[in-house]
Length: 117
Length: 113
Image 1 (tube, rainbow over the protein chains, first blue to last red):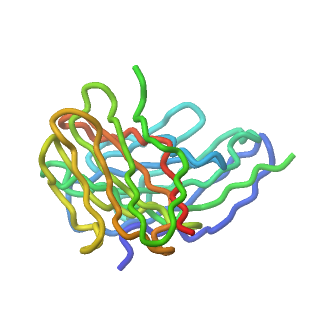
Image 2: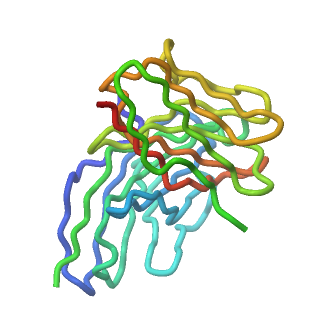
């Protein structure tokens, strides 16, 4: 089974509207972390937001929030008030076994977001 | 405080040549990770290193690929006898001890002709 699934290859949103990018995950570890990264056309990977499996509240960072539904194993990214500069690829990633030495991130296949006027 | 520095940004190699990709982690970061991104795909983990130690190389191809993170100097990802299928973006990330997050470099785009 895929550890990280992003089912939306591409999304369009109008400027100033909110958009939700879906991410579901699969793990049997009780301790894990979920990340979202943005990759603009220039290619760098930009960290957006992090949610730990034991965090009681949904993470927020400015216009980014993470809709964490643990029972459904989903960690959707919500971008409010979209801007043209939000057009990019967005990747969901997971790190399992936070208490151990395993440190790698597993990435989804990404969602390409296009913000329109 | 400079971020994770990768060089070169772009590298072109002919089939059969060697490629050396360098990564200098952020100051104070002792953990380095290498990822590969094929066109239109997500990043795939390759190897995780600490100073002078390979911690996890479960994502490294068994042949032609090697990585090191010496006591002094940058981490090096080395690809011997490159083939066209090695063409990809190679990203390095670093983190301090005990951190949950990672800082990525800008990547090296390898093109094998």
